Length: 119
Image (cartoon, rainbow, N blue to C red; front, side, top):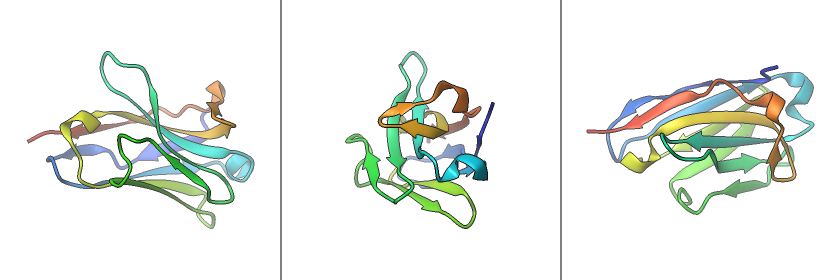
């Protein structure tokens, strides 16, 4: 059962910016943390950033200083602002609104949104 719907991916040049959105079911939005993950071809899915209901965030070292995660509680939406994008950021980005501890619940994976960074 999909509880988060991703949007905002696309093609961007190196150095550019994108903002991803994850619209989350209101039923679970305040229950769990929400994480953004990505999976590049031939690689394992990895955590990019997560945010708890109270606003505490965690950001991967590879994107620290470039990506920011935030949430709008009125809209049940979590955002991933991505700046200074690099070709190595190319991946399918997934939202999971059911993160418990550091573990994303399998039943809450979204369908993903493609981000391609290329000139």
